[in-house]
Length: 152
Image 1 (tube, rainbow, N blue to C red):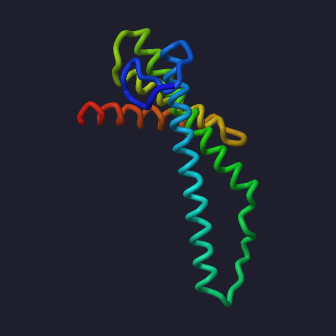
Image 2: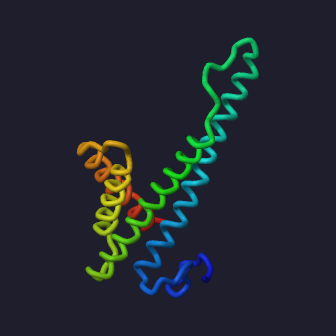
Image 3: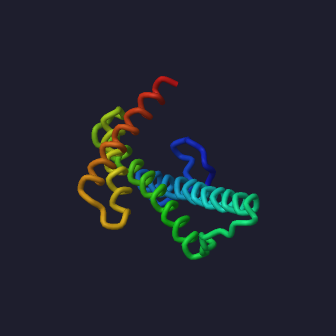
């Protein structure tokens, strides 16, 4: 295991193929970001509820305290969703770059659309409209990010 650099031979985890290496690396890194994001959301919500209840000491909170199991499920789900989106996006864009021989907005659009659709499918009882909407949004965000990256 090497560092977190961006060099071609500097990989986080060597699994034998560059596409697999980058996909797993993207999943793990984005999953960790999702974990931190979900944890901070829960902590902020609980802190706001605590302050609100403390300021209105004459009112008792009708909301029961957040259960540990519910918090763990939320954190885990968001970590997997972030990791899934990043892993699929990386896999698609790298595979298309190798297949087409060029990295352009089309690769980003396809990777973003796949990632958006995949994240939409993680919701309970996903509807076709939600999956299509997730794919369109993912593709649009990926194209915008690709253009912005080239401007900077």
